[in-house]
Image 1: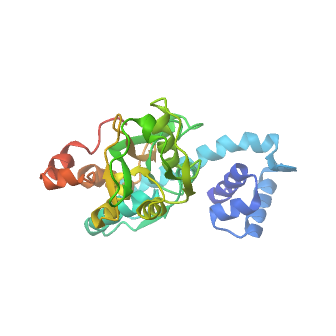
Image 2: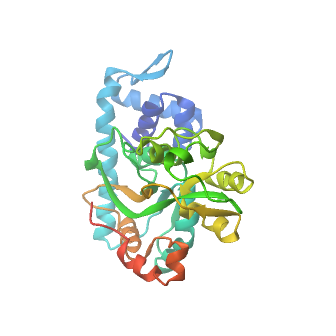
Image 3: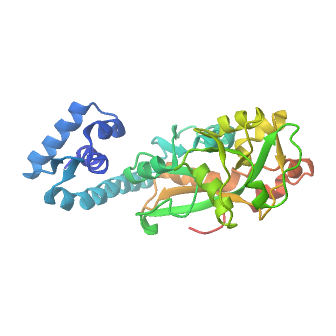
Length: 324
């Protein structure tokens, strides 16, 4: 069974739809159908059956699924072992990240890594948290940078994923420039209007959790939008307040488009986390990346830290606790 066929089979099994599977593996729908037919002919059994809700695995398909996952994992480990034994670091390294992290953290850092490791081609995939997890499972990305949260890896055992928290990024309360003080206390703050991302987004989860953990109902929303950038623009226009990771609005704060206000409660943070699949042998290129991140990817300092010369202290203390 060729790994390519198994990867296509798993894409169909997870999406239960030929069209979505074709998008996931970057093939035409006809090619996906052809590959499934080839695999079924090779195994001598039907792997899928059609139902009202989409394609469903047959008993044979359900039996194949965990084995296919193991075979693809072993295929990757075999390639990594050969590369390591041969002293090779070649091989494309694929990084997945949330848009905010990609632009604010990885974009300034990545050129230095590439200059130090010119033999490692790097690709970047920017998407949402749920898709990042699926891409890790499928082997489409080697490492993911995201804001972690409880339940992010629901359904995936901890043994399959390794995690390291880079830093607890502060969440900040932002308002339009010239905004006065806000009412004291979270209960009073919750009476004001906010701009937030849509339900299901990691940033919306942070927003809802900040009030829920204090036992306060979430505020009324002036708008639900699709990106942090849009939140910053709406807040600057006076549509409402925002509660977002500071690194996502550093430029808007520096320009004076928005201002940071005191948060009337326990400080809120978002763990910026790097996640990758555990393997007996990690690909050499991934090992190089993990080492480089540990040594050089530092947290974004607050304005007070930068002005008081504490950036170097933050760089040395807030990289990686040994938690994986």
